[in-house]
Image 1: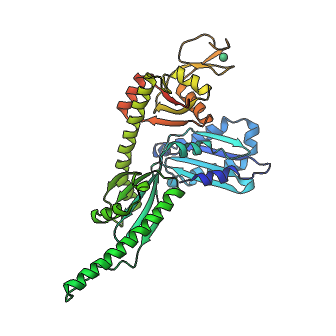
Image 2: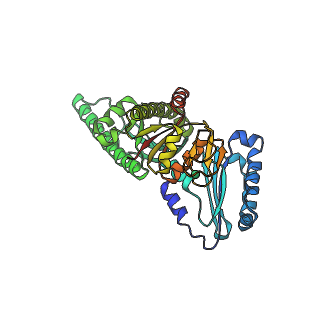
Image 3: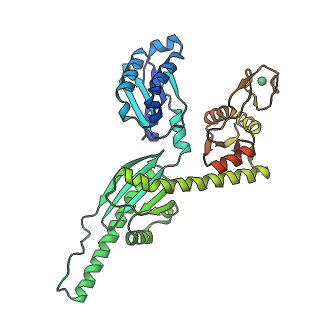
Length: 373
Ligand SMILES: [Zn+2]
């Protein structure tokens, strides 16, 4: 897992006069079975001009050996930054495949696709809490990481109290309650720091009912409103078990959010209220840098024509450019062009994954956008 500060550090990495090889490669289990990822890497290298290859020859050899030797440790997508001459070797293993495969050779690491993931995918914080312990997790791009464990040793146990007077028992219980409350307060403080540091806006809470009800009583409103779901998870559960429990909650939340986005897009575009539908309009507003957020059905393509001199693009079957009269080229997928433009303009991109919603968006023009003004 990577964070914004890691990427900022990468961008500032001083390569002197040297070149960095940035690799984005799909290494999912299907790709690994056929060894396909390795030949794809070789093809990506082959597609580069000779003079570029010679700048990073050592890096290419090292990566090739690495791809052969480390395959067992791969997840779904691999991002590598290598500059042997400056001792740079950074590896990110992603549990998702929605990235373009490419090799970039430049004086700086090519980080914009990763910045993009940070902007467009939601991070989820998980608090697993009971009256004595708490564990904190971060879920991002299908991956989970554990960040902190809070154990409050001074919460007294409910040991046998044979022989105690009822009054003493009562006092003892109050004593426990006090310590539980202190424990929960400490948990909230640490969790709050964690949410701020990691820029997390969505939370899942897990634990026994009693602990959760007490937590809710003292949880600040600011944190409460970030909660998207609740579940029960055994306190010693492994990371994988925890992920299995939270994934359905995240899925249904994202589905709901997708469907809200789509209906807002349709309503607003009908009212001409800073939203548009249809590839030609979307491309026009992208060229004007007015798009705030692009809404795109996942794995969908729209064929069209692109002008080779001014960049004008349309799904209409035109013979020459409608803007400048220049030559037009046929392209397989205008949506890809739209997402590239969106990234260049720092616009957000939301992918619609649910089949029913995808179909609806396709019927409404296949792509849409919320506009800045
Ligand atoms: Zn043109």
